[in-house]
View 1 (cartoon, rainbow, N blue to C red):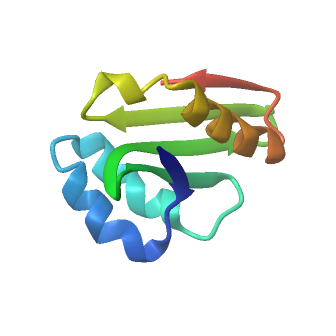
View 2 (tube, one colour):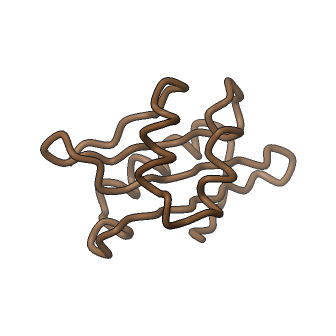
Length: 100
């Protein structure tokens, strides 16, 4: 299992993969913009996408938010994935976080 940060070039592939979740589709393009307070993480296993995480930090409140979508429940709370996501949130200044 390998979490990687998505690039703008990944947008079409991400939109297609999460086509059954319109609320993710609406947020994807803005989260992929070159900003310091948002990120999109793709989780792949054997070169196949298995989960997407949207990350956001509210710097003034020192809070981080994680929205994870997976077509398999096993990946939504997988410890290695959560550690990867939390590391990025802390690096961006979040002192606490919410998983949505």
